[in-house]
Length: 566
Image 1 (cartoon, helix red, strand yellow):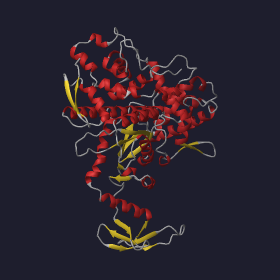
Image 2 (cartoon, helix red, strand yellow):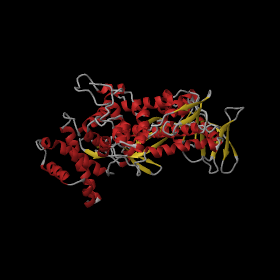
Image 3 (cartoon, one colour):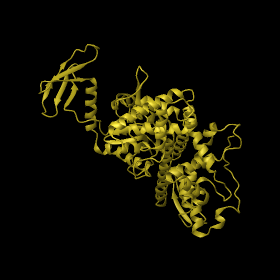
Image 4 (tube, one colour):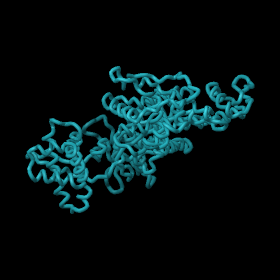
């Protein structure tokens, strides 16, 4: 049964921690600008718990634990890089963490471990079953309220991606098959030995149970591994047919791995596929079936890729601080191309920004014809730092007076080359040109070549200062994976990586808000003008900065505000 947290709990004077604190300890605990008080205000109390009401029904028994506390615990866990044990230890016994979570008295109970794990599992299962990510929806809601309160413009945004290695062993093809079979046999052992299998098959099953795949590879020659690989394929095909009526547990993994690694001949014989036919999207480990493979610039990764979009408004001449926040976080399998993130990221970002996006800064990996058209249709200026691929030898452009005439320049020699229009057989409306190179070969150009050349020319004209605006997003990418120094995650499956990325993004935004508020308060102390929305925050925080009297100059009239100290 769903129940919202009580926002107006009556404090118990005998269980309040401040009753046991004195002097500076109590002052820090009560200071509004202390991180734990700000985290509770800027993150935990912004959680709209009704988003998660779909996880609970009237038939689920007792009311749920505080959703705000559970969400806060997930964010703090990833913020500090804690293990689950450290999370519960700090949540129970660290007064600052308890305050950050909204547990203001010693009697407030932390959700037990089983409740915490059930909440995470329900989030994952709901996303798989309904196609709606509730935690991402919560992240968006929190960020939208922060953008509104702090008046984040968002006319300029930038994005970048990060490869995240899954916490799995790098298996060879043989080891993958061996481990998949070993896990399936362990799950169905009592049923397998009741089947009418041959002595050779039972002997192979026992050998799989008794020795891991890497040990087999270590002591075997290549010829022996090839023979084992064929034998395992036959056994796997046998299991796929024997247990197709009982397709629970590890069966689907077994069937998928078989289909990705073997083909079946007309004689119903399992034959290994050639290496070239194995897709990068194939299962890399039975322990993490969502994991894909990617080789990006020589960086081989089995895992996932995260995409971060953030505002990048620049400081004004008056030196007024600018707050930029992460507006969208996406996580997909590592084989996903960067340009596929582009349109969803901008669409999601635009929904929570008060202004229209005017400029987007990305690297060349986000470039595509579809993304260029999307920006044109939405009046967005797309600024790419580069275009993928080497600089072409030939520069091409259409003659301004004759659209059928192509101007070609050899960048190596600087010479102009006459291009001839080519009649295409399939589509007479498709324009195509050709030149004859110094080697006597023909080189062809089409409208896509002209478009790419024009884009390269546009990039060369962009000032370096403007292109450098994108570079700072790499600092955000670094902070996202701060606790993964070797770019290898502690989690498995796509759903868990999403929960991690959303939590890290919310923490990064919180740290930026803390820094922004501190800068604003410093400006207040020196009598600088402030936006009216921020003034109230600073007034509360300055209670703990000044001893008695503070002069605050607002946009209207200067006034003296007297505060009593604690």
